[in-house]
Image (cartoon, rainbow, N blue to C red):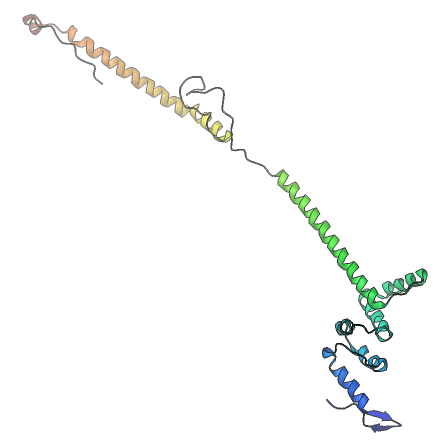
Length: 235
């Protein structure tokens, strides 16, 4: 990088060795850490060029060295930039009122911790509120009961007692009602009526077949002495 020249009485003079060291440190602030026993007047020229993270790194790396004489005003500027001028002035008024003084790096870190705690509590409240809303929704959902108590009265074909279709073991009330409605429908009644008519017709045909041989008389009946064998029912 080009060397920074110093202008004295309108004439450019080459930088001194100290100036070259300061300029080199400023150009490589990202590598700056423990400043050790570096003179404060040199740090006063270097550290104002640090970003917030770089300055924090220098502060934490320089263990056992109090840099507040150089950095305190820098931290106040960072505080005001991040949290606002009103908050900064409020902190100043509180320190004056309480007659206590704190380093601005301490105030900055305390403010960050306070904000983090507030965000944590807000997140916890939001989570708790969401869980209550979710529990309320779950309680309002319709729960289907699949277990139906056994019926005391076993209903038959047409709703009376006796053998027939047993609907007491149907698990769902809706299925049970549909089953009973189907058994009491006109279609099932017609089927039952047709079944009774068919059974009655078979019984009538059987009775007519037993009586028919006794009604016919002729030579065959007179010429034979053997008794006629009854004709069995035809099914």
